[in-house]
Image (cartoon, one colour):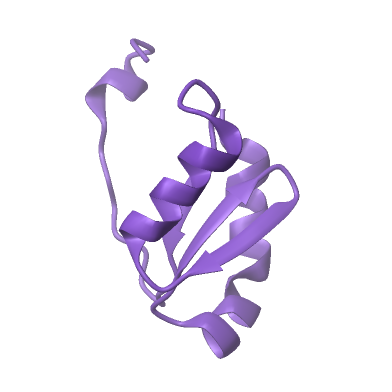
Length: 77
């Protein structure tokens, strides 16, 4: 579901770290927007793309935290 957005984030991460560290990025397809706070990023994504669309919100930081979502792993979402 987020393959394109995740790939773009990984490719651009070195540049993001240089210029936007500790900010939040919203990625939808090739569209990239930055915000100082997570809530602002999520609010923008919902306004811009809607609650039924997918968009990626990530904090720009060096170490990637591992998040496990069992429902995704088992194909329930």
